[in-house]
Image 1 (cartoon, helix red, strand yellow):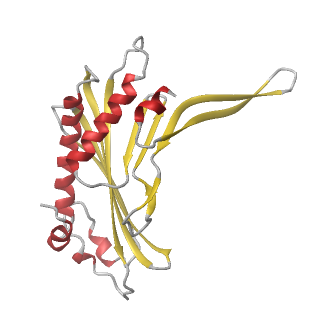
Image 2 (cartoon, rainbow, N blue to C red; image 1 turned 30 degrees about the vertical axis):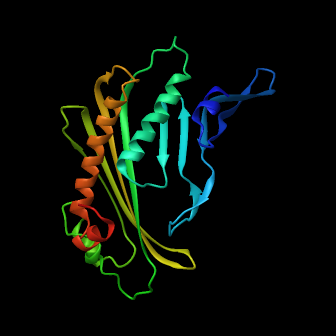
Image 3 (cartoon, one colour; image 1 turned 90 degrees about the vertical axis):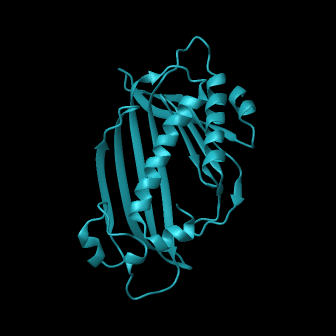
Amino acid sequence: MQLQDSLGDGFKLNDIKMQGFAVTPDGSSVLNNKVIGIDAKTPVLEQEHEVNNQRSNWLLKVVEDSIHINCLNYANWDDTINYVCELFQKIFEVVPTTIKLKIIGVNFQVNDSFVLKEEVAEVDYTKLFNKSKYLTENIWESGSLWHLNSGWFSGNTTYGNELNVLNISTRTNVSENINLVVLIEHLQQYTLIGEIPDISRSDLIKSVFASQHANNKALVSELLSQEVKDKIGLT
């Protein structure tokens, strides 16, 4: 209840349980029902999203040795990262002081979707994408449905090794009103050199996320056509 009370903003918490069975020598089974974490979400709201217009603004999960925070109604970077750090701080405040906390890795994932409502015989992806190093040549001839997944390491001497995973996929028949959706997922995973020494230092956490945010903007800027960047305000 302490975390429930501190989070505010209408977060509703639920236990995450691990269930299993242990068989005893006499053949009977014992249920193992252990709480391994919590998940939470803000109230479901009507939003201006084409794929799914009813969902929470925020999802939160604390399980074993990781914390997951998902922003599902993105407005701007400053507001978002400030709130993420606020949530981190609230979580850290309820952990017993006898536990030594350290941050040794940071993941950052951005999911973008582009929806094509009009029914077309052929899709011209050059209106959405540049012919950049991130796209293989065969997708231009693959029709409306294709899937691309790639990963690479890029050197980052400030924070440690950085793994990038780029996943681009298309799908159809999401609903009666949507014919084609293009999904772009970019995951960055930092394995930090050492650790963030003081988890109360939100400026340190922000600096790591800011680096990842800048990297994602650069990737997406190279990936998307100028026409699309103008429409979504990406500079």
